[in-house]
Image (cartoon, rainbow, N blue to C red):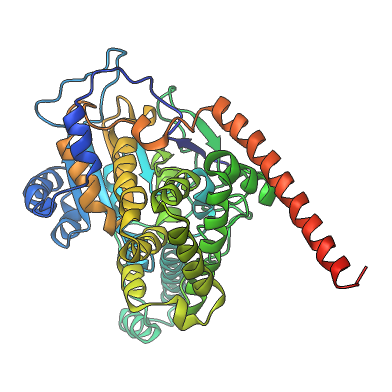
Length: 462
């Protein structure tokens, strides 16, 4: 069955009742002295102890944070919008199988109305993968069940004993599951939330023959259209059209270069990314929650990053660095800093932080603005309006920025969608940009072809 995947960005007519000073403060990102764990850990422990005590270990190790609606919450919009009562943030690591189990545990334990994932439409193919850790867990449980059935059959025939059973189990190396839940055999539709959410068709992450095999690497920057219907594009052509319409040719160029770097990095590390998001989809299916694509479209992010670079020399330097990582040796693609970030964050954020360390002007568009966009999706998007509980699945590197925005915003006074997308999510704007981009691309291709023909003629090859 094909689940429903909501996008948080097709929403909201904002009321002009914002606090300009708060907006400016949030756009700067959290101050250096902001300690989100000090502000949230105690309250998180109290909420989890009262509602899902078996998740306390995740609070204690910093994986799970609980952000309740502000006690002084007053909605600034007059159209009936209501923020969720509580937002749970699950910090994940891109290469960690444990993160898949953590996400599965939290969603099944709290049974949220919505699950917001750090993906955009163009990167939603990750939802269609099969989470390797959960597949392995399910296989282990099936082996345990088969072994138990064999032992029961042996005992009933008089050829076995409890002692033999215990010895056999020890010899087989089978033990209890590391998680209190599993993803076995449960599927359903995840778009059963409010009727106000806008949905696009996705691809089921469990029990679907069209899913990627367990452990398959899905390049988050790929131009394959985000995995067919899950990405909302018609393969390569659809992905190119979306990149040009939302971000222009500069975003398309950066995406191609980043895709090459991401592929080489994944191959060098031998990792299969996106398992935490696939686990979120599987668990959401099981509890009847809708999945919300909560990250800003990568095309807009890359376009804003390109604009922030300013001089042509800086842009050329960035392209050169990305090209060197994409086609150079694995050692060039894998800096020690990037490897460490991949171990503790999602792949896209790790790449973006690597770029920001060399190009400080990229911090705002690649990191701070995305933190705000994720926070907006978690508490201000149409997809979560009026819900009780929302779970956010984000890279650990986003926890601090997202927590700051959730805590400091007051009823939508600081989180403004328009500050983060420049109106480019409008269908009319996208259509016009796509037409203009296609015309420019055609003209540049014609110019390039003419120059090539002229070069061949000059060299007497025609």
